Length: 86
Image (cartoon, rainbow, N blue to C red):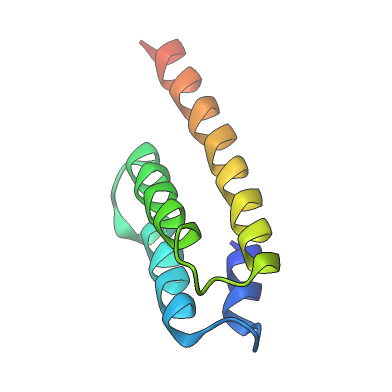
């Protein structure tokens, strides 16, 4: 989440984008009581939407892709772990 938090602190990022990134952070937060895979998928979907926003600066888009890749890997690991439990 620190990459997303850094995006929120970046003065070059439009306020509307920061608000949506903050929403992505809250969707991912463990206090939401939703299963991890649901949180990952919800956050990934929102990050994809954010990345399609033309007001996102190019350097921010790169960071969002990085986070999306990490979330994808975490989702795969979580799915594998849940399959092994069953």
